[in-house]
Length: 138
Image (cartoon, rainbow, N blue to C red):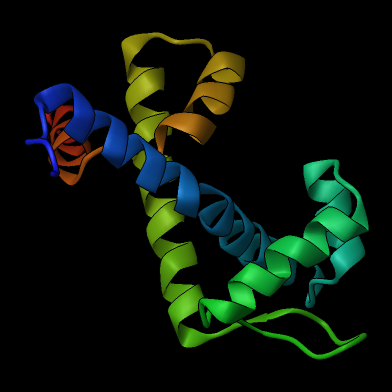
């Protein structure tokens, strides 16, 4: 028998779902950024960017491929699909809004950069829209 969800259990469910996609979002955003800066993105670029082993990167790339976010062949540059590019753009916008909001609150740039990286994945669209309105109305 399934129990009725409480507000707390609903919040925890949402957080677990957010965690499941968080790494995929970070990687699509990084692939887009590295590709823009270097003209291409390779496994070692991502390993260096995230400070992880190439094996860890390959595991995430497999998840990205299963989710149709990248097109990648063996020993070829990593390319985002249209769906991957759309997700990367969405993440970059969300990240930018959270970062600007924290800076407007008076959070130091160093802390805002660190905090925005985690907050961007767990913010509701309603809260994000309020942050955006706050920034625009200053």
